Amino acid sequence: MTLVDTTASTVGGPGLPQERRLVTEIPGPRSREIHARKQAAVANGVGVTLPVYITAAGGGVVVDADGNSLIDLGSGIAVTTVGNSAPEVAAAVTAQVNAFTHTCFTITGYEGYVEVAEALNRLTPGDHAKRSALFNSGAEAVENAIKVARSYTGKQAVVAFDHAYHGRTNLTMALTAKSMPYKSGFGPFAPEVYRAPLSYPLRDGGLTGAEAAKIAITQIEKQIGAANLAAIIIEPILGEGGFIVPAEGFLPALVAWANANDVVFIADEVQSGFGRTGDMFASEHEGIVPDLVVTAKGIAGGLPLSAITGRAEIMDAPHAGGLGGTYTGNPLACAAALAAIELYEQGDLLARARRIEEIIREKFAAAADPRIAEVRGRGAMMAIELVDPATGEPDAGLTSRVAAAAHADGVVLLTCGTYGNVVRFLPSLAISDELLGEGLDVVIAALARA
Ligand SMILES: Cc1ncc(COP(=O)(O)O)c(C=O)c1O
Image 1 (cartoon, helix red, strand yellow):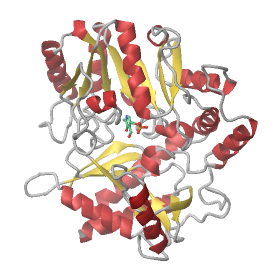
Image 2 (cartoon, protein in one colour; image 1 turned 90 degrees about the vertical axis):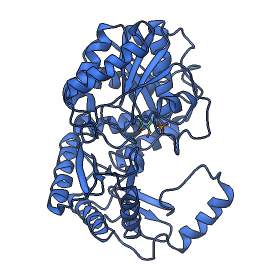
Image 3 (cartoon, helix red, strand yellow; image 1 turned 180 degrees about the horizontal axis):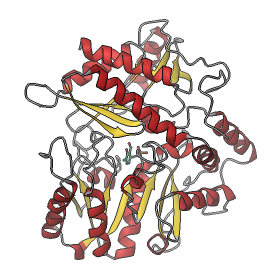
Image 4 (cartoon, protein in one colour; image 1 turned 45 degrees about the vertical axis):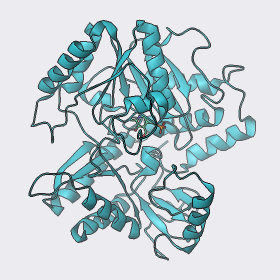
């Protein structure tokens, strides 16, 4: 089986052309009408980045209620990596929905859940004995990873890093760094969560990975103490915090220290996992072997599924009944995951992600805009950080204007970063070179105008 043919008309359902096509202003009248109803019916806290309302999607496009076809450079935040409505995923889910939709795995099981666990145990870094447990969202899986680490070590403290994002539930809000919009007004937060400094090569004065790790480890030892620390959790490439790639050597030093100190090392690969970075998991780039790996997003081609996978002795620490939930490892999501995993394993998706990185780097190198302080990331998880070139200060205003202009020109574009000055690119691996190139040209033109 290969990656969906991005030139074929079957991508994302029969007859969805892979093109940017604007037939109204963005958002168009039908989307504006639905958006007005959204404002009246949906809680204000549920914000919308680009208020177009989607009726079909596939390959590298989303089609809205007015018939506009937009180039999708966000993949629903790194979820539809194998394509939106990928035919193999759609077929697997259709077969499953006709067989049964739910039993609750912890009441009566089904093979699909076990198969997903087996696949995760096989695919995640390291060849030690592993176990997996399935959940619904990334945040839920992160919470459970912390539960497992505490149960195994008998310790309570957890370290997360500057710029981290781990979710919006109470414990994951505590782990997340940025206040607005994720935490502000929602405290008190879970106790025994501590923050350590990250390696951020553009902004930490060019510390090496080893130097940055030494600073972080010293702080952890002095302010918490390994004797109290259950787990370190980190995104191997930080997502919402700004697609920050820690300097080479930072992650391996943290893993070595955690291993030597009975501290569980948790890699949050919710955004960076499943082929996104050109490796199956971003941890593989430096050869680190996390004790626990948290996955979600790209795992199931758009259906809600998340997981934790890790060393058997750690994962088996909680008592039976301690992990689970009504919908965890839902059969439809498991069927979707097995189809998506087959695409990751049998297609050339990792090479595709690396090719996407080349295209993005070439485009921005050619643009040579002094306001781009850095082009960074790996594979199909890339970003540009925008600054005032005179001072090097983050330019969030410019970033919002670029995103707004790209939206108006028919490109779904996401921003991120602690300072709000990072434009991120998370295209589906099913996007064609031409469509990706056109989307990037729109962004570069928006930057030139902004
Ligand atoms: C690294 C990381 N961890 C956790 C989460 C939370 O996942 P979810 O939104 O599925 O709860 C996200 C979501 O963006 C993420 O990027």
